[in-house]
Amino acid sequence: MRSSKKNTVSVLHYLQNIAEVADVVGAQISEQILGSQDHVIVNAGQRIDHSIVEKVKTNQLNFDELKISMTLTMERWRLRQQFADMLARFPDIRRVHQHMGFEADFKSLLGRLKITKPLAQALAVMSVRRPLLMRQSIMGAWFAGLISRQMGLSRELQDASFQGALYRDLGMLYVDPFIMEEGASTEFGPSEWKQLQSHVEVSSDLLNKHLEDPSEELASAVAMHHERADGSGYPRALKGEHIPIFCQIVAFSDVVSAVRIKRFKDTKRTIRDVVNVTLLNMDGFDNSIGDAFWNIVNGIQLEAVTFDDVERQRVLGILVNRAKQIHGDMRKLNEAMSGRFVKKPQNQLYTTVKNTLNNLIRSGHGDPELGWWLGLVASGRDELDEGSMAEIELQQAEILRQLDRLQRDLEESAPISGKNYRERWKR
Image (cartoon, rainbow, N blue to C red):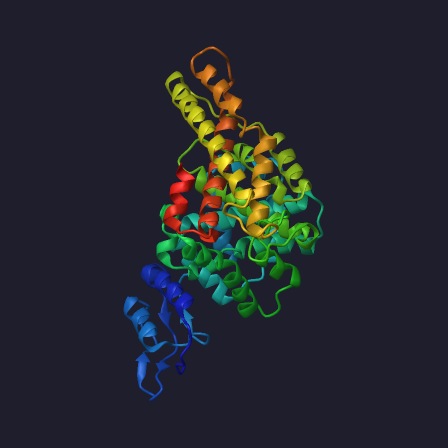
């Protein structure tokens, strides 16, 4: 293969990820790479390490035709093993799987999976380098297949939902590894968020490049998995009927798997608790998807979260403080709606802020009396059952996550410096 100059930033990030796990996946260059003077840049059979990444960067190589071999790839049987491991790790998911009698259908979905060598390699790299993300991909595919079956979609659309959910985040391997490190999101600026959002386009490009004939439905499922029915999604800010139902299923599955795998990590929360989070996000999805999810969860007896006396008082204190914070941030959002920060009504940011405000009003979490009442509960002058307390805790956390995202978006679009904006937001 000869080299040619091209912007290889995203490919560099993928190679960095491969280099980190090359010993595990047995990754090496299978075809010699020659420079413009026919000199050898990389020999065939060389293990992919960080020195190769540097050569790619220095020589600005075009790796569109790069041949990589791996001893570990994610064939169907390995994906099946990954799923079995997930069921062992998450008893609540195993109970849903068994209760819904989904085993045979899941095997059929996996058997019809369109997969090629480069995609199997990328999944293998993800499984070793980003195991949490791989679990989200596996769970998302399982959940999308289950929901699409529950809703009576055709076999073709069930396949598109299942496969789209599995492949949706392959583009994350092409994002700067620093951005992907756990906990790094707390320090993200506008440029980091843009790069993170670019994974949607990269994932779509990978399917179009490496599948001989990807169906239009599969391509759409991946391309739209961050769109929202209320227009608050990305990259195209599509709305309602412009997002097919199977694409909304993949998007919903992305939320469910992220909450269950990542946000509930090291907690006693189950997929039952995910319902309380999705209730605050249903403006972004067709209600029939939420109904299908709730019907599945409600049909299974999953244990609710319980608190001892010490933990109960600690959680109540958190709820009181969060209620005050949400009320204050809601006031600042109203300022944004009045044009203090959002200068162009009806743009995507305006829509997102408006929808978030409407959700807060409907949920009751923006009501100042909620904090006052929770204070009465904390002091023992009123009562609150554990189920309701757990529900409020989850919904408050979701609201604060949404408000934090809006703060970043407003900071990026505000016609004032980021520093001044942050100072005004904190007031």
